[in-house]
Length: 149
Image 1: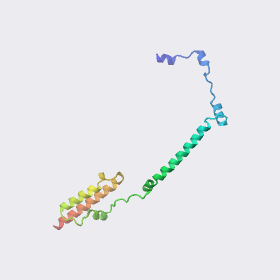
Image 2: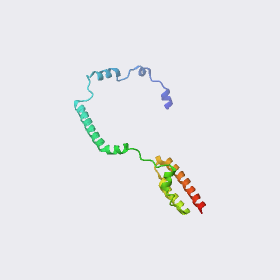
Image 3: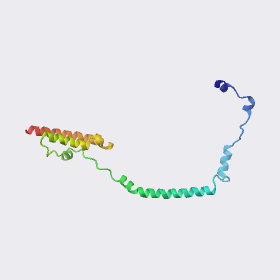
Image 4: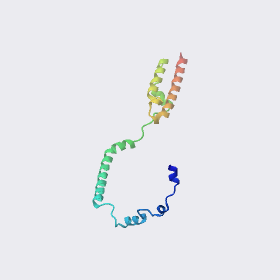
């Protein structure tokens, strides 16, 4: 049935009739730009200006309150943990370790603080390198300790 309605043509007299509400967009635009038509009253304009002033006042108060927070954000970035083997060796405390159990304890302790799964996402790549260096240093120290015996 819908197909029949779409295919059916309107009667000739309906097709020839102009739209019931004539509307000339260009003349309306000209009237609006001429200034003869007021879109808003003076009261609405005054309310708009008052609201705008209140907004500016509130925004200034919010920015003043947020200034300490913005200063923290703009502060220099946190210092990144070192990936230098000498600094990691000092952090591990390899000089004090003597027995195999000591090395295992150092490895677990370092991993607890520095494992990539336990640090912030932006530090994961660095943590992975730190863990590799620490494991290498611990393995070397373990081999040297075993060779001394």
